[in-house]
Length: 244
Image (tube, rainbow, N blue to C red; front, side, top):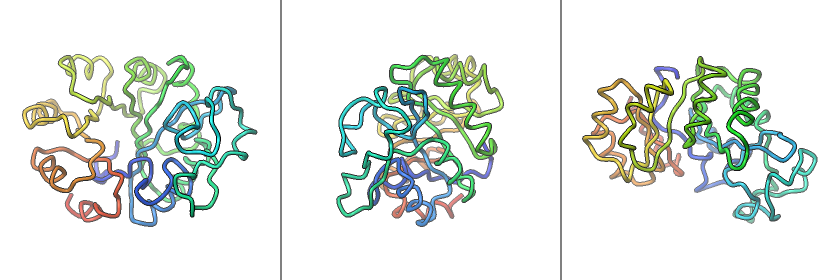
């Protein structure tokens, strides 16, 4: 992961203003000045990698049902922007289309792999293949809650930086970080304390916090030495880009 990575990542784009995990939402975040984005990847039933958080369409779209029951040709018939009624129709984007868009704009990527019901071997191979084809590795980190996914990514592509996502910093984080050859820890900032933050940094790992929408909490975390945060409100955190 590039040493000059900005300290703010748009969480699924800028979901406070635009549909999450959509091409239009990513364009909006970039327009606001986002230099890095966090987003999610999972698979359809035909193994097409798509950018989507949930395993179903229910929450964000005008359709219901599992992504594992869909194929690539189904995407154009889905509007994934129903939470923003005045927004143009947004299909669920393929990972390829998102990677191309971000690469064109020089935007860095924190790609969270959502395994859902797929095997860690399968989803890791599909995602790594796409990353190698379409995205510069010096502006990239792959992240996951799933230790098996991170282990597969290490096996398949040790050159791609890896980050472990956790709600609470696990007691065995140091052994996990060593085993998975992590470059970063991605912790829920609401459950992190100063001693934990200092320990992670002292061991040489980058520390990113999610999902931080409160400037008071953000300032506290900066004071503890975190490297960056993910936010739904890119527009309110732009000034942190200049505080590196």
